Image 1 (cartoon, rainbow, N blue to C red):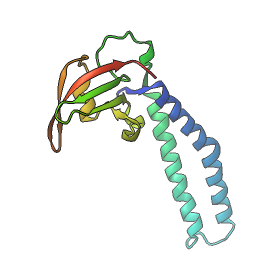
Image 2: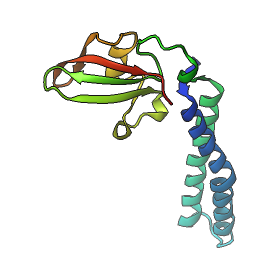
Image 3: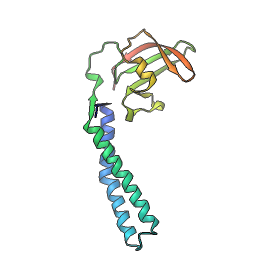
Image 4: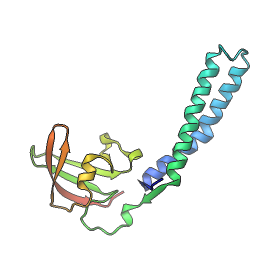
Length: 159
């Protein structure tokens, strides 16, 4: 499996979720299964089947997070020298040349992406078009509505 890029905050977020799943959710689900077993006939016990389904989702998510953390390449952009180039973890200000609007995005790993908070996945079309570009360059991003031209503004190495 290839390395999975993530920021320091992304790793912390996954470790917190893993801890919660193992210390809170897993014991709660096990208790629910035990309680449902006490009700008798398991074939027609909806509570038992629901708890087992929850257990499957919980265990699957635990395995998924453990795998991602094992293959994680944690990148602390604040420790990298500022070059003015767009790289993983940087915060980029973009000026839309067509409608004169400005947006700011932070390029993060897939699990951290949240457009509402200005975080886009490194695998998104916008991020792929921006990686390697420098401040002042014009970038064409292919979108479903057509090509959009952006000028790269400030590139910051902030957390």
